[in-house]
Amino acid sequence: MKKVTLEDKHFKLFIESKKILAEIDQLCSEINAYYANKKPIFICVLNGAFLFASELIKRFEHECEVSFVKLSSYEGINSSGIVKNLIGLNENIKGRNLIIVEDIVDTGNTIDSVYNNIKTHEPNSLEVATLLFKPDAYKKKIPIKYPAINVGNEFLVGFGLDYNGIGRNLQDIYIIEENK
Ligand code: IMP
Ligand code: MG
Image (cartoon, rainbow, N blue to C red; front, top):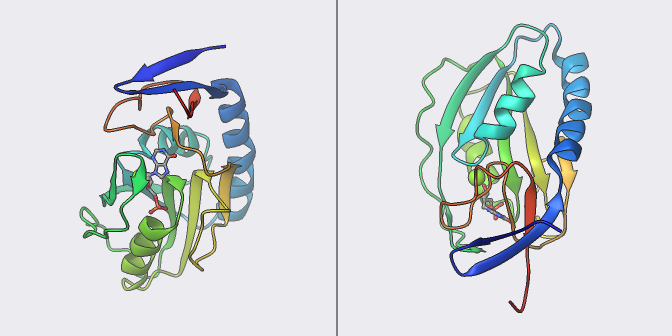
């Protein structure tokens, strides 16, 4: 069993990269079918979503654009609930078909804030694609239409997800080992 230690926390292998990529394949075939002639703009939420966004977007087989935004509300291993401003949205998105690309939706505070901010720009459509979704932790109402993988409430790292800024480069996803 593969294990990693990041600072003071121990993690063990949870989802292998092969399985992650297979789930992204499947998710993107759905997105390919629906957005074929809609020239979507993928809006990648930095930092965590950069790896998922690259895997997702290179599987999209039709015309599209890509944009990057940033909004940070998370410190350590608990969601702080603090909501900050959205920066980096330069494109004219009015009337366009947008897909927000996130690494993980936990309580939903972050995605809710990103979604509502983007909504004020009057897109034609707005959906959420996320690599990981924690349905039991989710407290918001906005629909998470495109989750690649549903998970429990445990803290995860790898494939873009970090613990205190580290672990994003891990190819597999690891789960925290409690009591260690
Ligand atoms: P939310 O606002 O509670 O939905 O949390 C979303 C943000 O918290 C994500 O974009 C991540 O940056 C971070 N986050 C939530 N759960 C985890 C986790 O299990 N591992 C790493 N980061 C997480
Ligand atoms: Mg994030």
